[in-house]
Length: 459
Image (cartoon, rainbow, N blue to C red; front, side):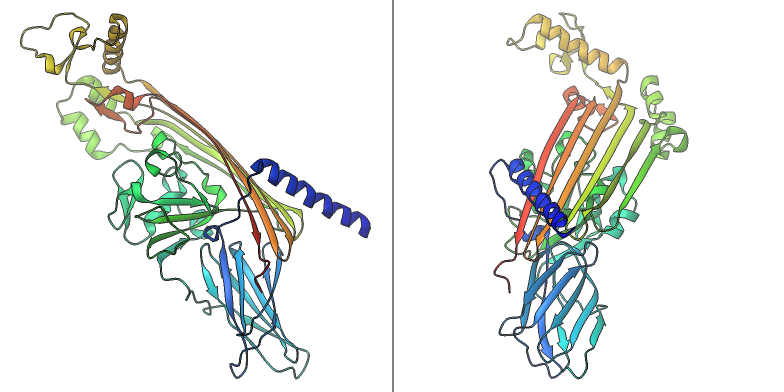
């Protein structure tokens, strides 16, 4: 039996390492502290004298993963690169009783100071201390706030976009109506976004992935465990930004099987029209087509559905997590133009060429056929509101492997497909804007993140 267990463990280790290196195709990336947390503290006796050489054990209460450290000459122990979660910390030393601190909660990007006091060994006993109100983050000076898993799971959020929770942070507000957020009034184009320690910004304008493509979200809120927003004074591990930092981590499996299913429906019969829009349609003196449009819900139907599941493959060692998130939205958009638009070669009297779209204004670089096709497209846009359809599918698998007390590894893969007709801009109406802003858009993302944390050399 012991031989079979050993073979299983070796095979699991080999399979995970092979998958890890194959996925990276020879590119090895060490994990950043931005996707982890640290627990540190001093081991002392009852008289506050330091105890060097004490054995400190840090145990993840959710996964059973155990890390062991030794206090240095100053009695300090440091447990870096820890997965945020719930921990139990115990310490032992010769001639002292064992001390154990339970209920320690580690957040992303956080450095927790948990000091441990050992008593002289009068009897073989264990001193257990609750971690309530003893956690101090004295190592960092940044102004930050953590949105934990309870907030992400229980608070409502528009379109299930997890990054909207950053607006709960003081001095953070919306930057315009396109989804950007501003820290201390700085443009949202100067922010930095991380997921699991990896850069989550896209090349275009250095925005968060997917934002300029019109997709509702690039990561499912079900796959985000928690995240930290930093508004100023952040450490050197964060860079590339003059604004704020958003530092998120994804969920992983634990020793307990857990999961959820969800379905959200948005339907016109269940929603009221905006009072201002309704009054404008009835009393604004608008054309019948525009009034009719304003009296109709822009969103005909919106469906969001999916679920997640996570658990152990091998208890205390190998874990999995998987999320699927689906989004479907049907509506319409209205494009209006106050310019004169015609396929006639001549303009009627009283109409200037500067306010007209007609063959005489077409550039010489296109053919007459192309010119007429473009003009007819504009005419069709102003005659009837086109149907708008948006579709998104997200798949997110993650594997975590605890190799030994000094080494951990993980790999996750975010698969996102988004397509929309007349949906590049989410606006319901367009007036004298380029029809291309209401054109179709497609977004396909395959984003692989992996990390290997080694605590060798950290006593």
